[in-house]
Image (cartoon, rainbow, N blue to C red; front, side, top):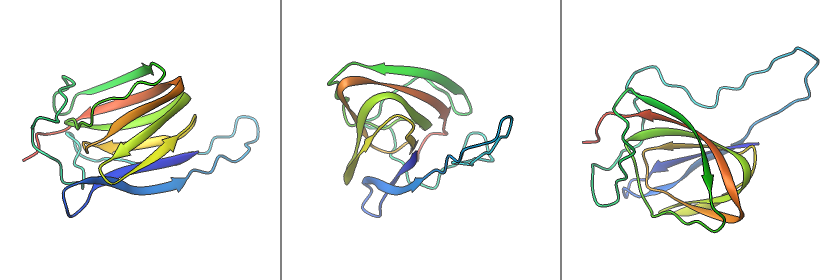
Length: 145
């Protein structure tokens, strides 16, 4: 499994900021091992990435600051979203299929078990031939200035 994080560079463009492998050791029955992928302490969450204000590329997902939404998204085979950003901190995990995450400075192919952190940065989804199912938690962020 991997965790991929996108961010915003000094040029104001989104890029692949970090990628790390998440250990998934074999566990004895009833044993639990946790791995913190990301955490916040404030509501609305504060993210380190400089975010864009509302502009032509902003996608309104109807989530107020401090609100949350947990959803399963099913993308049709070959679907390509518009390049966009939202006023949300997104925690995504690929459940089935394949999808490519595009940023303004790079792309990464994602497979079942891969996790993505999108802190309101520009991105686009390009879905593979088999479609893609993704579990997503959205946390509403305060408006970008």
